[in-house]
Length: 240
Image (cartoon, rainbow, N blue to C red; front, side):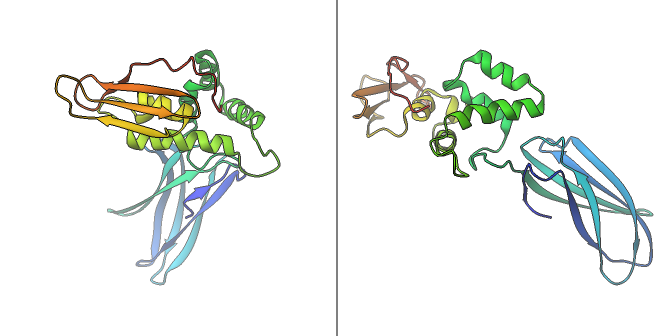
């Protein structure tokens, strides 16, 4: 089975090989979400033979949302049961490779669109959700005649880097103050780090020479929870 499919495919076929003592067996192919909930299931019967034989199960992708899934194949015969699983991803033509889940990608637009617009997009039917999301980014695509949308790709690249570098025990990295600044303005030109100074809490100063600004983050708890001490929304220059 392939690991990634795109939204242009309405169905796909799971190929598997069986072998065993001659006789009939029950087969079930299921698509599960990453929490183990069954999204779709198809049943079939196959005739086993001592020689390996290939089979297919057709699965419908038309109502499958953009995110990661697990394909599970179960073969039963008498008291025997064999289960095989494989992760796969529904891709989407024109979508940034840094996006793994459309619903999360919509929530991560919090720094560039109003909360009302996020709610509307999140609560739309799956097709409408996709249309609204893509319409926003297509309108801002700096090279509309190419397959890539560089602005979308850069935004979600920053989201991914923030998630990898600035996460805490209670927050995703992109939700933290440092993550917010990184997503909005990119990597700073320079960072002054003061982790251990007598009489003061750990802090960092991010300097952006092109903005003529610096942002001060203070670790209030001593556990890496850096909070922004300087305003950010008064900076007029933003890419998105």
